[in-house]
Length: 367
Image (cartoon, rainbow, N blue to C red; front, side, top):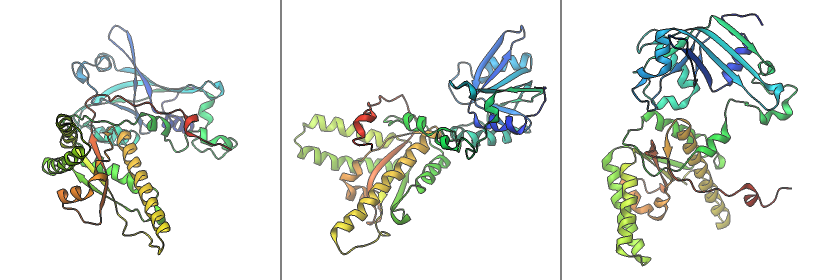
């Protein structure tokens, strides 16, 4: 295929479907260096950021940065591998790379494109770092994968569920989400919390009534008040169970610490006022059960949205056992029924994950 300096529509569609590329540079002596990178393409240039991952010596010490400063020639390879070799493909762009300093022409555009493609970047401070911009001078491509389009309505529609479809990769997201109990001392941007709540808003609900309301706590004072009130109630309950005083105190200290130190808390409440009302108890109970189920769906949406943008969460059910105490501590409407407390932040360490049952234990019938 002849070399060009722009991407064809098929190449651009292929590039947009991929999530990672390889950036290759070389030092002054010609020693090659390649790293996987996230990227965005605006029709003229490829952009890749310098993100917040801990790096010894800061971004200035990165090998790819030193290489670009020594010699700007670079290559970006966007490829896909499949054990079905009829689905292989790549796009290779070669040309000069340079650093776009903060506030320079194109820097803001690059960040907008990157944040559109990777929600994780929306919670990172990228404004203070340069962005690498590669301007293709030569573009080559190969592979049957380039003939595929994002539309799966053609001859392969019967296998559409196997395709990227809307560009979402849900299974790894669901598997990777974890429950975190210790967070960094780092605030969560309001925009990130709003993104979580927006995801919750789209959960299914009975009659479309959305029988849930959320209380967001980010300030120390209400978190402290809630922790103390819930702790006092829990102490009373644990004492009723006959637990030793030292065990009770240890459990209380851990629980209070989780609530106080979480950068943000989202209290998920059931709100039944908008639901249908029936004269018989069975149907009314079913109506309320549907509402509880939908609240769980809304919370799951929040948890997945948080993980997708680089946050971590937990799920504390303690408010279920002391609803009156929670309402009094936060001065909430009596119609709100506290169900769950979701701590939100950035994990201080990787949590120990509990094993999940295999699918054949969970599916009791598959006719």
